[in-house]
Length: 366
Image (cartoon, rainbow, N blue to C red; front, side, top):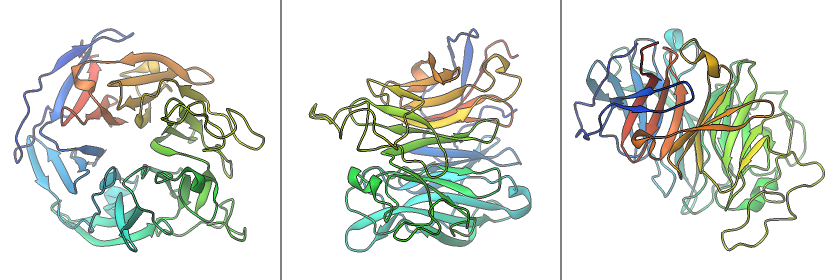
């Protein structure tokens, strides 16, 4: 179990540990790192360090009350919602020392798109080495919206990458563009031969599923099944169970409406388009997703956790089909960007407004 940490190299905020109420009883939210600026994602290293990305382009390693800014990132396009985004620590990190990142990359004239960067962490943990952009979406578009950008390691070692529609919904139905899709790539950035559109003329071979708006949460459940949580427009945020080659409908179908109140597409259903497992109306702005696993939260085993950027809570979803059964909420859960189950079995999450990483566990220490 990690001790409470703080970032020595940046100003600390006066955020104190506090008890949050839950269906399991009081939970203690302990600040692990404070003073973060627009934190976006985090990952755990085998030595107990936590790596944290900040959207403006900093990568921090936090351990034992100390922080180190890690050098060697690519040139990052900080544009609206874009910047340095997700981080993935693969299962074989102890042997390979490889890390994967998503970030906004400048493309063509005043355009940008989601890209995946691979590098090795130096032995002393201070820099990235042999870095390479292994993938970037085709024909980036303008505007700083909807980069998606979650990374998930599949059971077979390939990578799932979520891509937003970049603010142009029609592109989510265009298989010649990566916009609005979940991709499946190798660790070298190539398209596996068994991807659903690998041999389809006019379709991009990296696409695994399409018809997504802006999936900012993604995780595997205990059976290795991929799920995503994605932003709708006004209403219609979704949780989707991702299947190979399936069209999830955006912007032809949606349970939300446009921001001006007008109908999106043709309604809520269409032939050949999958229904969400769960949707929120009003929108909660979901970001970050994890499935509970371990003894600390045994009563919640297999439940999904999704952060809310808009309403400042962690949503717990349970049952078959998944539906929201609880909101974990307190001063620490302001604008939750990322949620993970730590190696210790506790719930860890990032609060953007508090600029902090927290560890959440039963207050009685069980």
